[in-house]
Image 1 (cartoon, rainbow, N blue to C red):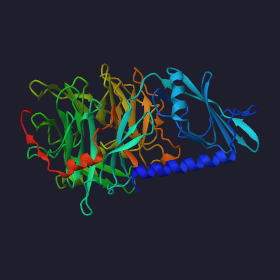
Image 2: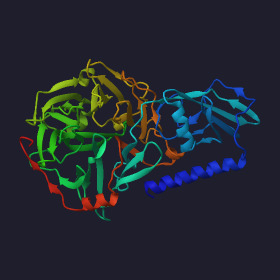
Image 3: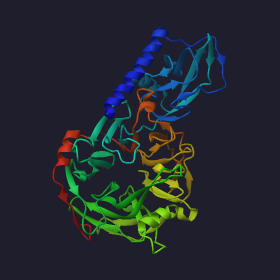
Image 4: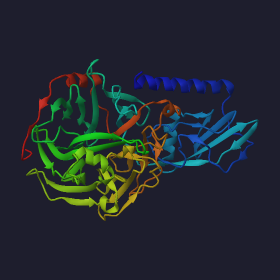
Length: 508
């Protein structure tokens, strides 16, 4: 069963459950006149209590987990209200959008009532702040089983945030055969638009699907002068270049550690690709430093990336064995280098966030589009924090150097793979807080001072969607528009020959 079929099945199950409730109580819901007030908030899933939401987000659906024979929920702003019966609270898109328009810049109030043994309980009302800061209408992500070797059913999918529409950008099976499989990863966009975008295909039919000014092509980015083909990408927002890390990675599996997996770089460097000349050049290739996760400043003139200093201490070991033994010693700082677009040359290295001085590791630097804040994941060690329960999101003010955790958005489980909205007011990230096994997508508002609100789970049409969905969300990215190509059109290019990229010492 593919993800779209699974989604339809989950929606059908939810509809059947809701229909059963309607049969039991077919009269229109009304607010109970005689109820006992409770000082407790209602137990609902997902937890949408006291969150800040975009004015253009799809309806927040949830199920009431309190014991009861019947339920009534009132969602209101002033005299405008939505009244719903049953334990599944699923406002229609039309009535939700009407209420959002009324509530922009203020709060909506949600009241939950439950009847048990003819006695109605009125739970403590809660509010949701409806921010005037809209959110980009689309996001994309990988959907992958939470396994270490099974990626055949992997897709890159896109979702309309203003409703629940989800479509597949590319399906891993489209260019595979019975005996030869591939993996897809690292989708990225320039300035949130899809006329300049890319994703990688690994193994069978391998290469990089690269779209430049609306024209797709498959590239072979491996050269004799670079460590590997491009891996983690970052489109320059102003100039026609893309930064990549190039990585040789390995996995190790813990037997007595709550962090199940370590994904480690044995070697890694940073390169830039020029699509106009179809050339790559090395940027950072020190043998004693592991460079990863590049990202550009909004003016396109500074390149940020993570870097870990690691040297073999025991000459009897090879690098892989020593990294396995000393995996807790691999810690990353966040560095930056100025870039001159006229000469394609980089200036000296500057340390932006010295995590190693704190005994920590900082990775995945993302600069807010307004240029004010650096968003990164901070953990005890390593660079692949999606498996690290201690990993939290932090922000640094680039003008002062001060930094702080996004405490309201963080949890006791792993936070990672974060991205900024185009207006710098929202962040999207993956977290395992829901059930500790699957990564789900969360959204949080970030104000002009860099302080985050409580994060909320990406809304779905059915409140029962996530407990029944056996895929993890991975590498979420904001988009202003959907990808214009069909999966079949992209698969035809993937099955074709790749254009060879050349190495240039100057980058031109």
